[in-house]
Length: 213
Image (cartoon, rainbow, N blue to C red; front, side, top):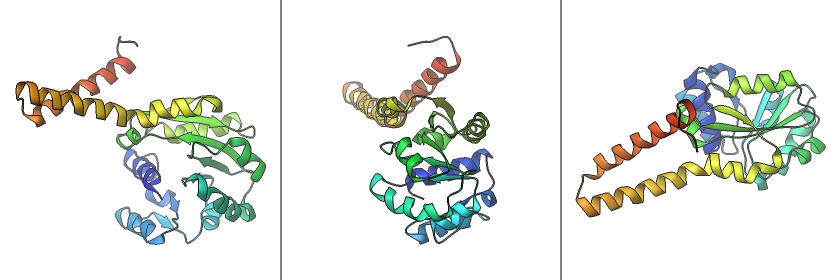
């Protein structure tokens, strides 16, 4: 339950995609998992990832690349062919996971925008993921994002657009607001509100209206 895992959990619950008692979690620092469970009564906490895997149909692995070997080693004894294992770690290849595990493998790159049930989820699928598996996973993601299927070779650039993009855009907007405050003396809060509403409206025009890039 790192920061992105927490975003996913909270987004699934707040959007109604899942109830707390449908989610089982663990963390290397188990107190963090218990703190999250205290905020969402019904959320189940396990001491080890092997316990989580035994209790679920879809397993999200939300760890840094250097922690992956430890997680995979813990998973192997309880891994099963019918389970869907989802990695959100961009550099870890689907091929590597398929060679290590016998479950169905998917890779999903979420975005901080999913916290407000917006933005995209970049989806990639292994060879064992059948059409009904893809549909089930995407149905889970749809309440918090727009699932977009890409080829894994495009992971780096697409994740920069979807996941890193908000930070770049926010930095640009901050500099624009700074310039407005310095040049004309407008109240910073007013300028920030104008910029934020402009970004929101532009996003809606691009995704729902007649504007195109």
